[in-house]
Length: 184
Image 1 (cartoon, rainbow, N blue to C red):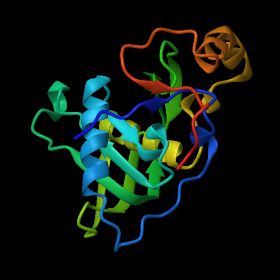
Image 2 (cartoon, rainbow, N blue to C red; image 1 turned 90 degrees about the vertical axis):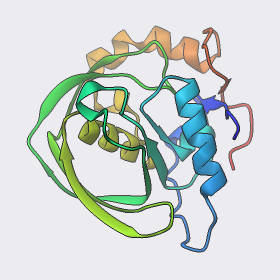
Image 3 (tube, rainbow, N blue to C red; image 1 turned 135 degrees about the vertical axis):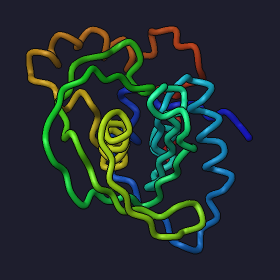
């Protein structure tokens, strides 16, 4: 397993829609690296484009949270949202936009269809933090960032921090890529 650099705000991979993963592709190594990378950065969700790979793969591990301590890590390949319901606001952050956190309104409940790592089709419904993480990461593979959900005044409030991240002027405690490297 390897710890991959996480791409930060300003990297082109974060704004590109990721490609579906063919059922014939072996993604085991990439998924293991993504989990290792996410754990190293103390995250609970990571999309493949956050490590510069434009594939529709998401890894999630919320087992550090008390409400989810019995939940095993989840791999979602080619996920699609089937249904959303309700609305609730919660503070969000992102490994690709370190130091920026803000309140984001998202659906309270989500039903999603995806493939697991062995390309078995799955479907489930969830809410709470797990639902929020799923929605946040699906946004990522669609080229959407959590700051896109903020009102213009709140985005303007974060402009200085976003420019620092884009220029690579922050010290981040995990390996990052600022966008100078090529996207796969």
